[in-house]
Image (cartoon, rainbow, N blue to C red; front, side):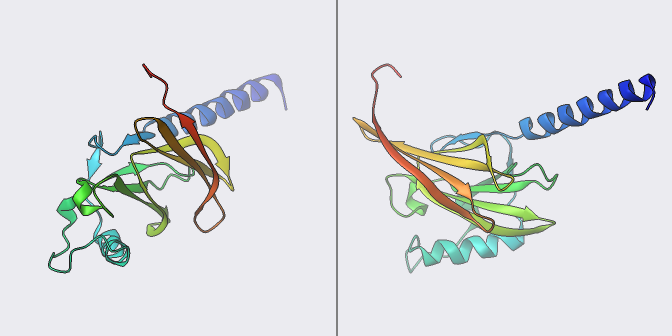
Amino acid sequence: MNSVQKKLSTILLAFAGFSGILYAQKYQRSFYGEESFRNPIQIPVEVSEKLKRDWQGRGCSDSNEQFSTSWFEATRINLNDDKFPDLLIKAKDPNHSFNGNAISFWVFANRGGKFNQVFYAYTLSFEVTNIRSKNYFDLGTGRCTASICFNRSFTFNGQEYAKAREWEEPVRPGK
């Protein structure tokens, strides 16, 4: 390989790495239950059926209520840099979550155009981290009382996200 080819390959590798970084950064990574998504999208029909089954199975529904996707919002997230945007869905209102103290979040991985549910959490905050497990970014959740924050991290096990760590920390005044 001559020096021109080496320079060209270095430039191409740098560009490929930079475009991967841009791809990962074009999606929101931190979410709070009380805030709307910055870039909401319509929930795909395939996903709405899976969401409805899971929502009902978790006992989130009142037997008299008809399920409606209008109770939820969705946005694209990046779980693994595979160029297929994944989905994060959350209840817009705590009344359509498990109970009124936090918000339900669902993650659906896009595997070549087919969405599979890989995560559910009942929490106040959700984050896609920069750490990876099995080529998927780890996830984090948190919620706080007046004095203690409860945090969890989740890693991908090849099929779904599983709890990796759980810890508590005191709420720090002014933070």
